[in-house]
Length: 78
Image 1 (cartoon, rainbow, N blue to C red):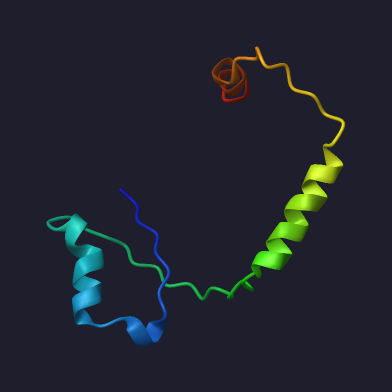
Image 2 (cartoon, rainbow, N blue to C red; image 1 turned 60 degrees about the vertical axis):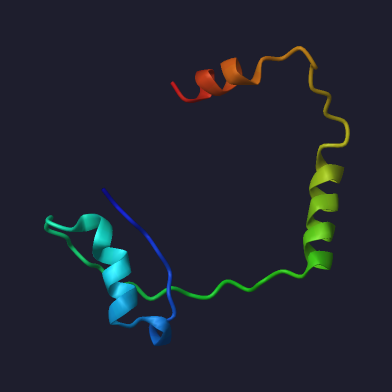
């Protein structure tokens, strides 16, 4: 079992650590701490602009309405 979570160091206290470790009671665990770079948050305007750019890239693409997406996904995930 593996669990990944991101926390601000200032928010970690004994109660939070107990909560994180509770699913692993009675087992041996390895704890690895890694610094994470904060990713900039996009505004709704920026998200909208990116969506519009992506739509423009695929404006001429037509998808057969009868395509079975489950079969297609199964082919890709073989």
